[in-house]
Image 1: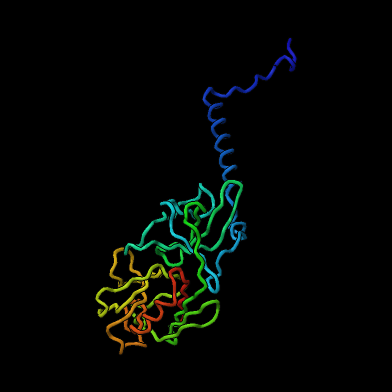
Image 2: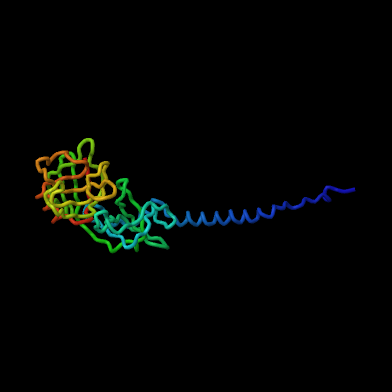
Length: 259
C-alpha cells in the first residue's frame, strides 16, 4: 500500500534548446536596458549648455569629418543625415550650433541641419565639427512690410526694401541662417551682383545650383519690382542694397523670415 507521499513530483525538465533561448532573451534584455539607460531624455539633452540664442550671439562650424547626424545625443540613436564639407556651390557648409550636451561617454552638439524639411535639427559629436565661429548679427525679413533689417548685437545697422515670393510660390517663414556668399561674375543678370545662399527651402527652385530648391537673397536686374512679390520664393534686393549688406553680414548669420 502506498501513501500520497510516495507519489513524488518530478521536476519539470525543459527541452534542451529552451535553456539557450532563455539565455538569449536575457542577453537581449540586458542590452536593451543598458541602451535605454545610456540614452538621455529629450529634456535632459535640452538642459545642456546653450551656445546660441540666434539674436545677439550665434555659433556655427563646418564639418571636420563626414560623420552621421543623430536624432538624439547617443551613438545608437537613429541616423537622420550626414555632415558634408561643401554646399552645392562648392563653399564650406555651415552648421548652426545650438547646444552642447556632455555625457560620461561623449560630448554632443545640437545643430541645425541645412536639409529639407525646413528647421531640421540633429546631434553630432563635438569632434566631428571644426572650431566654432561666433557671429553677433541677425537678419530679419518682414514679409508684411517687405523689408529686410540687419541687427548687430541687437542694434539695427541696415534696412532695405525687398521682393519676396508670389502668392503661388511664397517665401517660407521660420528660423534659418546664411550658408554662403557668392559674387556673381556677370553682375547684371537676374541675380544681380551678389547672392547669399540660405538654409531655407522652397517649393520651386529659383537657385542656379544643384540640390533641393534653395531660397537665396540676391540682387536683381529688375529693381522696379522692389518692393513687391515677384519671385519664386527667393528674396530680391536692389544691387546697391545687396552690395551694402555684403559688407555688413557674415556667413553664419541667423535669418528670421516672418509675416
